[in-house]
Amino acid sequence: MSIGINKAANAIGAEISGVDLSKPIEPQTVSEIRQAFLDHCVIFFRDQTLTDDDLMRVGRYFGELQPLPPHRQFPGMYPELLIVEKKPEDVINFGWEWHSDTSHLPIPSLGSILYALEVPKKGGDTLFANQYVAYETLSEDIKEKINPLNAIHANGRIHNTLKNNRIPKRGEEVASAGHSDAWSTHPVVRTHPETKKKALYVNLTHTESIEGMSVAESQDLLHFLYEHSTQDKFTCRFKWQKGSIAFWDNRCCQHAALNDYPGEYRLMHRVQIKGTKPA
Image 1 (cartoon, rainbow, N blue to C red):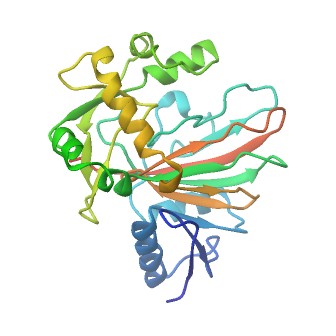
Image 2 (tube, helix red, strand yellow; image 1 turned 90 degrees about the vertical axis):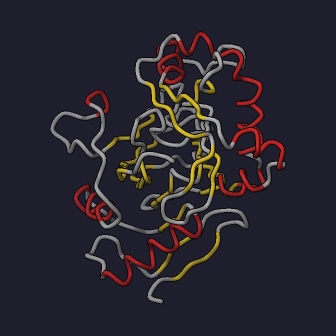
């Protein structure tokens, strides 16, 4: 193999070495990176120096880039490029709680590639959780219960958080649902289209209810699954440095960005790769 692979934790994650992503990558190396991505759910690179064109080129090795909705696009910049910025005066950070990117869309993201340009002196790490293992460790009774279920994903919790500049507490799910203006329905347990493994596919940020149940009726089961799926033993923690990259698989892992650097600045650029309809 032309790349080095060093596991980040037992459950998820690996750091990749021996690759300069600022230069064109040979097909064999792309294949090795993709296999590491599939094997470990999230992969990391250090000490990279990329332009936005480089970042988009890297993303295209793994699929079609997914354009951002108009409200996320920056004038004069690429429609595929997301700016993830937290200013010193900001209270809420981007990706503040456990989620899988864009699961409220009919065709969610396959994966996201995040590149660090400026990082705080301390803090600002990102957590990742393996949703294959989250599913596999459920009891057979719970698996039997959730396997046939679908969940409704929406963007109301995000709108509620941004409007009020605070994260809603448990018990406020109905109020958050009142802010939703985009919805999609996906299986509670999805089958990864490449590995064919089953993964739990609900998340606190986007999942609004179980199909056929009210928002309020859904919460006991959903919160049980949220808490189960993000246990420490299913996770790894990535400490960012300038020039670091994380590439995660939204089909089988969740992530959460820690907001533990008040008064400091953090700047990342991200592209996301278009996926397929969850099944």
